[in-house]
Amino acid sequence: MSAEGLFSLKGRVALVTGGTRGIGRMIAEGLAAQGARVYIASRKADETASDPKGLIALQADVSSHAGIAGLAERFAQREPHLDILVNNAGVAWGAPLAEVDERSWDRVMAVNLKAPFFMTQAFLPALRRASARGGKAKVINIGSIDGIWVNPWDTYAYQASKAGLQHLTRRLAAELIRQGIVVNAIAPGAFPSDMNRAARDREDAIAASIPAGRVGQAQDIAAAAIYLASAGGDYVVGSVIAVDGGLVFANPGAMPEA
Image 1: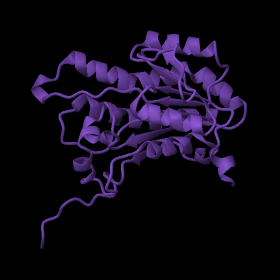
Image 2: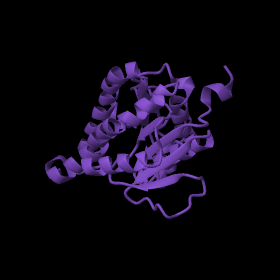
Image 3: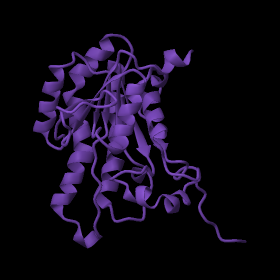
């Protein structure tokens, strides 16, 4: 029951897609701080550059099946198994309803919804080998609170993709738990990043609408990922954990005075 026994990731291998920046980077650094050997995959990853946190870069475009297959093949040349897969890569895009085009819609769905499914499929052998060594292999999908509630912006494909991913999480969890692979999702709220520029550039205004009174910080999202990735999260299966300062589930909203 020690914290070390419950939450240490020493000796475990993790792969975080979209791990070079934003929430992916926050999660990758958190897993590494707990002792995991962490690979970060991104289209813009520089495999020749040294990383101050010891993260290992792999260049890959996970929006295509070929890109995912290539990543799985190259990863297998480095590691015999994968303990923790974090499907974090994502894109946000919006336009008024009448201006939504098929190409942009398909790109959002390819990265946010299709890629996590085919990443999990491609890495199943490595995840199964990890679970066979003892303990549970973990898949953590990074969704969004925008897949839980309806936000006020014209991000139709984004919201639909994240809602789909969070339901896909439950379906994959039902399939894989008996194989020793635990699947869950995290639904972040407002974290400052290039994707969430409102939280980055208008932090005070965004914080005013959040019950906790602030936007998310790196340790908030990293702690949730560490919990799910560690032995401490083994009995949490098929859940979607909102990490949003209470914005969705602890926000009574404004009511007119009696």
